[in-house]
Length: 234
Image (cartoon, rainbow, N blue to C red):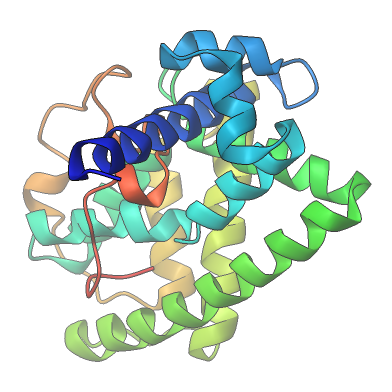
């Protein structure tokens, strides 16, 4: 097989996974057909079957490729600001839904959890992914806490659970009742959990919020389609 053929196969796989992630988030796994995924990816349904065997195979491949925690992408934002509160504000800005269409990462996460509650095969894969992400997040939260002098309310692995739960819950609440979850409330919640030192937030909260069409977290891409954030956090 030539290098060109290898590249085409890799591109097709990546496009199918990205299309599946977006459609599953928007419509739910059960409502999305193989044909719909193929059309959104600009490929044929035969390509879906050739790469994944079935829609279930596509879903499991998506789970496998999406091993990074949501925090892996989101906490990459800490690089844009120096203050601990500014870093937490940057994280929240990339999580928070600002319109009915934005924040699709959280919709996909919730859709996968719902599917896992009803499908033991999906649950097994999701459980492994979450455990790996939790351990990685814990290590990096420990490093962040040490670097900024934070004093979290719990050990690193428990803090990883609490932060993920807080971000997910606040994003869900904001989607349903936008006025009930302000940016300041979310940042204060994160700061309280992580024992962040007090101080100004600098440019993280003053820069313009990205639109729903450009925010990186709006379309959670499969690993092969994402820029790497290894060494930042997870």
